[in-house]
Image 1 (tube, rainbow over the protein chains, first blue to last red):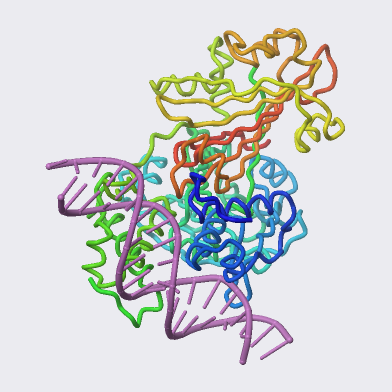
Image 2 (tube, each protein chain N blue to C red):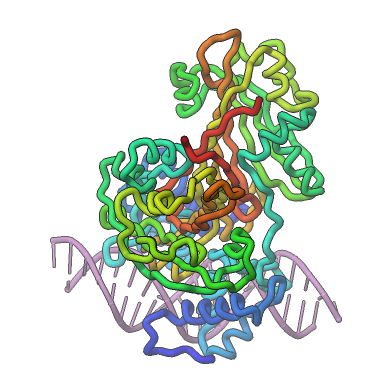
Length: 260
Length: 260
DNA sequence: CAGTGGTCTAGACCACTAC
DNA sequence: TAGTGGTCTAGACCACTGA
């Protein structure tokens, strides 16, 4: 294996593609150690920085991860938590469990939620739009971080209008059995419909920190709007929700009927 | 603005965070040119490579993009194409348009599809599983690339069992009005249900090339299974579909009723 | 202690753009 | 032609791991 100077790809790209080929071919299996920077310098005959750049390309592609003092290793696929329309049906039938909790526990994984903030705040623009209230109106937010086993996997913010949560356990740290939706139903909100919107992006530094993300892991932003009716009124949003999740450990599934 | 050597963040990280703050604060607007590498060297007093690394961090975070010989610019947000359960309902009511086509044209954008391959191939494992056939069985695949205006935005592969497509226009380049689903219905398949599964990841080099992706843009893999019945038989998959889309120009929306 | 990843410095060349 | 991004070379130091 040498660098081909006539190749249009740069030397670092050639090395990276070479290693990538070994990974996809199975020569290097998940968890295996990649050749060290010094080894790459010797086998390809480049400068150290060039070998480093090749490894850096693989890391930003999410194929490898470095551990200081130990080496660079082929990334192991992460267990995927499934998120989507399936779980709501299951949840509300079985009762007693919040949707995410039911999903994770059905996989036999341990689960924990950490409250980051319970507060009145000015509504972000997109939240105000869903509630059809003036931008900056005060709303109540529950900010929390979800852990699966020992890994933080989700940052979740639930927004409510103030009169919705007044006098309910949504103001408290522990919402009780069945989660927040159960409390809303007790308060007379009949849930009718959910809308979920998904986007993907690279994480901000603060997301990297809060979710302990490794380089090359994109993030998914999930917006959910829970619609309800109360005392026969027209349907309107009762909860607006945003979650940020590590892209390498979540997948999303939705089922819907073909019309007619 | 100087580098703080007591700061735990590396100098390149400090510069990157500094520029990021200017972007989020609006001091640097989308389309604006970032300070050149040489300017950064002067203002922060670091080596050129350090300034370069700071810019490289911003690019891999999807915040900036470089243009050779011109400069590095704050990335402009891309127009988002909405994909999800909404469009099927609309499509099958209006008729005559394939779902993706209807979605894009409703935004007033021009649209084009390029056939990459029409062939019998061994079924990938996940496709064979949905069809409940032995892995490697031969199936028919339609591979195509979708363009919106002058940008490639989607790589899409539709898989069918051989007897499903025999004698239909699904074997040809142009499937005719209403798209592939209309042809399936003509052939007696009554569509009953769709399942869509989403994952995100960083693109492979071949995806980068085919979709002309810039650094720092993650990609979304969409799997769709179209279920149908035929002549009163039990429901089973009739089409298995995979699409790869640029994450910065697609968002996904699903609506589903609260059970009971 | 040797080996490893991570970062920085200093200097060079090339390809490309805009004037 | 001057300025820009992109890549490479050569050499250095530090933090960390594991024997």
